[in-house]
Length: 280
Image (tube, rainbow, N blue to C red):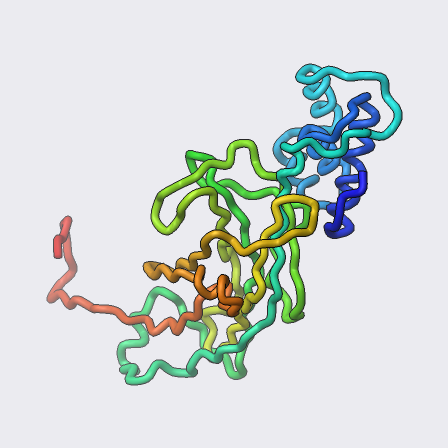
């Protein structure tokens, strides 16, 4: 099976998948064998996720034998990957990092009001702190809610560093992947969600924003890439359509820039409110 060209971890998973198909006496490599390859590649993130879900190598083998049977072990699968197994998606992008310094003080801020601030909690430091996208989550919609997307590479720290260059990650299309029309989403979507960015509320602070260029998607192992059909950024209540930028080959920030101006309206009462509710 001469399939090309993924990361070393993904290629190892594919080799183990082919090996598993041979052990089961199957003349093809299907998604069931890819699952065995993922759990046997013990350095990958998918291995840990599958174990946490309660799956084991023996359990998957028995399920496969009950579902599709087994032949005589040995040999290499002659038919290569089945059409369903070929539904492996690889996403590639060029990433650089842009810096944005958050102001030491909010212009026009009344010193007497700062003591009653609650959210977000700003921590003042003597020298500028650095804030990065330390942890992200890739998710897909299964018809009921958003689930973690199991990738062949570890992706939670995809934008954690400052090293620019090409980033790729790949995954087998989930069987329960459904389309959605909710909110900003349309069709079968993958969302990248920022989970952790330490120091983002410190002042002063330098935010390091991932800047993406040449975003491409490949739907097979053939190495042919194309632009995504649509691309949307959501920041709070703002929805930004980035599809045109991708089509024109222009770059865009992976996460939108925020000033944290902390605008607020304060209501004063003559005495403690003893009962409620209060309507405005």
